[in-house]
Image 1 (tube, one colour):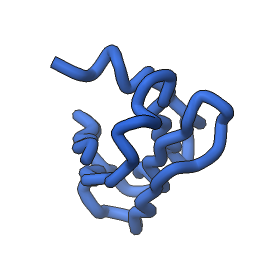
Image 2 (cartoon, one colour):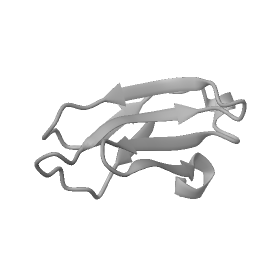
Image 3 (cartoon, helix red, strand yellow):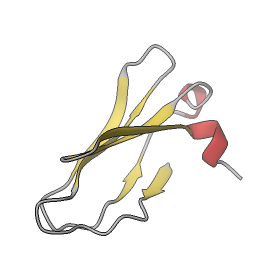
Length: 75
């Protein structure tokens, strides 16, 4: 499981729409959508074998997408 918590405060008209994980081939492995005003926190289950090369992507309704390799976020 991968836990994603964005340090991002939802504001009127400004929120995280979705957080998802892609594998190295850019196939979606898991996703969680959010409603306006909802805290951007997700626990996503992905196969351990898919973690190398995987990327977490968050999409904001105003600012587009942010990406971070899963490996950079692991302890």
